[in-house]
Image 1 (cartoon, rainbow, N blue to C red):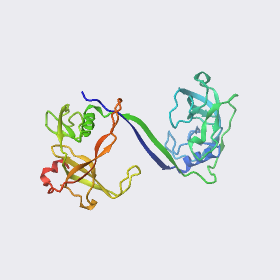
Image 2: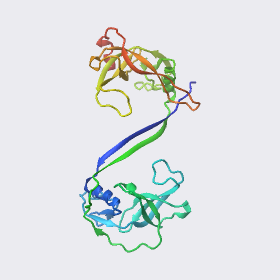
Image 3: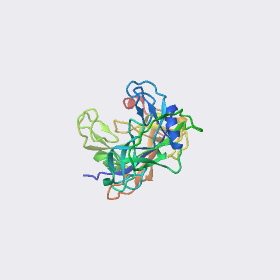
Image 4: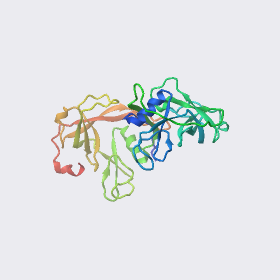
Length: 326
């Protein structure tokens, strides 16, 4: 049985959004060490504030200021903080009902051990030294002494100098990808400059890259079949926007390519020809390059992979020969 590969992968992108008058006021207030909530139609004070009433869906605009102190309503201990979390040392995730609010705010509590945390404990905001108008302007909560004071919320206009109108938040997902047996065999075959698919025992279609099962018949595809290396462009698109992580000059062409002997088109970049000369039916072949493949636990090294496909110089394929693969 061939070895199943794994590889660490990261999906990361900046998420940019506008805020509107309510969220903008809330985040600008944090920059100014002011916590704002909003009064709902039933009189409750909601923190963080929302633009629409959670019960009636009415638009809300009555902002109020609440206290930077509050009470823990529930909590969970985090013994192993991850990258990007509020604290680098073990801490508690807490829901805190700030004095004057009727709902709870989720954030981190800096505590030495889980034994130091309990429901009902009094806490206060520890403000970040540098504040920019983000939820991270609250560095965390910290324990506070004393009983909950009687706190009267005060109306607030929500107006500040230089208000925050938008935020850019980094979104990131770190995970380990295991392609499974079928795709591991496909990747390992690339090390020998071969493209291998799998044939369905029922409909006899050959799938590249292999999926381990036929999507039409729903049966396992165990028979390996070498296809290509040449193929036919079935359809394509011209890319005019440069990707940040690809050192490829625009415009360039990405195409669906039906490799000879395959019943499923794969996609790849077309090179070696001006972008405006790429066409349906163009016969192409792979151009191999040395590149790192996913690593197995035993440390499988790099292997050649198709960098792009280029024209073979053959006459264009007849449309009827690939029309079912478009």
